[in-house]
Image (cartoon, rainbow, N blue to C red; front, side, top):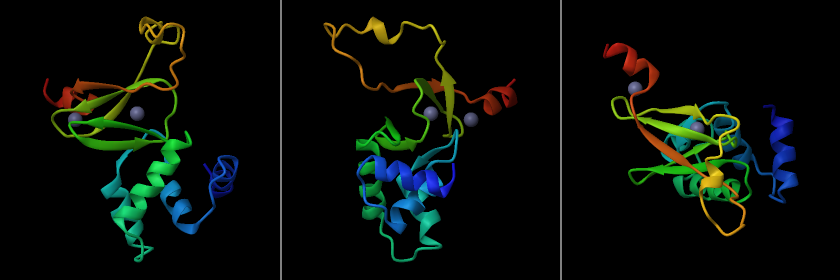
Length: 139
Ligand SMILES: [Zn+2]
Ligand SMILES: [Zn+2]
């Protein structure tokens, strides 16, 4: 995704376009990747020494609240990703990485939750096991 698209995403959500927000988005919008706030903070600090971890957390919160990114928790650690499609996140218990696992297209998984007709806005599923690489290596 290009810088200009990030600017438009922020504007559409009514968020102010700031250099720090754009720096965070440049990192987080990478497709298929999952990030912890600390990792993103360390990456950005190299080019923007004035940024603080609290600022990064605040930016993540506002992006998440506006549906630009998705967040989920594994064992008390919060992860962020730009993949908003319904999918499950597989936490590898060996190497600690996250892998996207798609939910079959016609799956009625979300419909299984009875909310008396209320709509599910978002869902996050965390699976635990081995990522593709660790699973291959352990054979
Ligand atoms: Zn692994
Ligand atoms: Zn994911």
